[in-house]
Length: 143
Image (cartoon, one colour):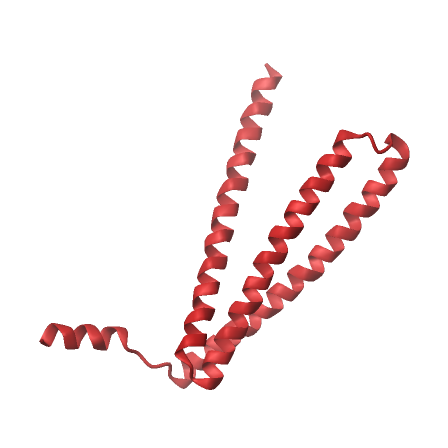
């Protein structure tokens, strides 16, 4: 009986005003980060399309490099849009949960934020692994 009371108190906590302010600031920076990423994505799209058009005049549309770049651009665009929408949703739900003192919105926001960081971690591991493999492949090709 006493153990159940202790466990209930450990997992039932209230967000005080200082924590609430910190979480609101966090959600604001999450939104700023996502918006900045969308702007960066737009600039990357413009730059890649410009470069593709510029080099296609020299090499023609049959270039394998151009096709690879377009596939890479499409894949990175889709991943970026999904991740940044998730980050904006997380921030909005955390803000709404704090404003309305609604645990459901708050938990949903934290869940989306956790998913965002899990996906980012996995992507970082995959990209770093590919870089290491490419590095070793390049070393082997030299010999």
